[in-house]
Image 1: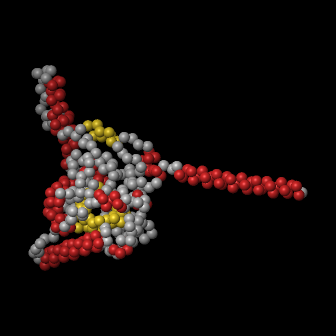
Image 2: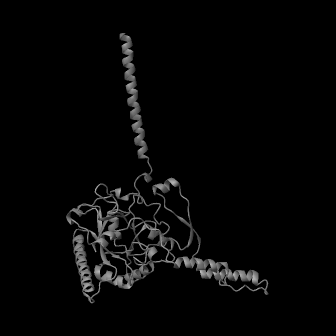
Length: 398
C-alpha cells in the first residue's frame, strides 16, 4: 500500500507539473502572438482614433453650450476651440413695421449682439489658455457675399484663426446651396487670402466628391467631417479626400449620461468633440490650414480598385481609383461624335442627309441632355439620419 501510494503521489505531481508547463507555454504563445499582431488591429484614423492617446482633440461650441474653462484646459489633448460665429445673413440694421415685427427685429439684433460679445470673450479666454482658435459660419439660404461679409465682421479672424463654412445638408431650401457656397469661399479668399475649411456630413461630402468637376473649390477644401459612428472607413469619400482634417465624432446625438465616446471635463453632454489625424504638436503647426488640398485627379469616370472584404470592414483600406476618361464637356463630346458619324457615313454617301429631329446630334446629344437634366433637378443625396452640430437645440432655443 505504501509503494502504491508513493506512485500515486508522484503521478499527481507529474500531472500538476505538466499542467503548469502547459499553462506557461500557452501564456508565452499568447504573448508572442500579441506582439506580432499587425498594426491594423489597433484603432486607426478611421476607426475610433480618439482612443489613441496621441491624437489631438478640438472642441467646437455655440452660444448655448456652457463651459468651465479651468476644467476644460486640464485636458492636454485638447489643442483648439472652434466657436460658432455668424448665422446666415446679418439682422436688419434698423427696425420698422408693426409692433410684432418691430419687437422681433429688436430681439434678433439683441441676440446677434450678445452672441458676438460672447464669441469674443471666449476667444480671449481660449487664447489665454494656449488653445488655438477658430470660427465657423452657419450657412443659410441667402446672398452668399453678404453672408461672407457678415462672417468677417462678426469673427474678425486673425491670421492664425481657423475659418470654417458649415453646410449642414445638401438642401438649398434650408441651407446654403453648394453653388452659393463656392461664391462664399471665393469672397473669403479675396478678403483674407486664405480659404475656410468645409464642415459637412457624410452624404453631402460624398455628393461633392462625386461632383468635384462642378464644385472645384468645395472639393478641394480641407474637410471637417461629421459622423457619429465608431468607424467611417467604408463611408468616407476617399475618392476625393484621402483623409479628414477634423472628424466630429461626439455630440448630443451619441453622448448621454451612460455612454459617450469622449467626455470633456467642464462641459455638458451636448458639447461637440472632434479628433485630428495627428498629434497635438503637428496640429499646432498646420493650424489654421487655409490652403486648398491637392487635387487627387481630374477624371470624371473612374473605377475603384478592389480591396479585401476583411480590410474594408475594419475600415483600414484606402480606396484608390483608376481613372478611365478625361472630363470633357458633354456638348463637345456630342459634337465630336456627330462629326465622326458624318465623316464615316454621311460623307461616304453624299445623297443621304441626317434626319431633322430634336436631338440633331444623335444619341450622344440625347444622353448629354438627359445627364444635364438630372444635374439641374437639384436632386439630393440621402442624408445621415442624425443632424450634425447642435442646430436642433439652436432652433428650439430660438
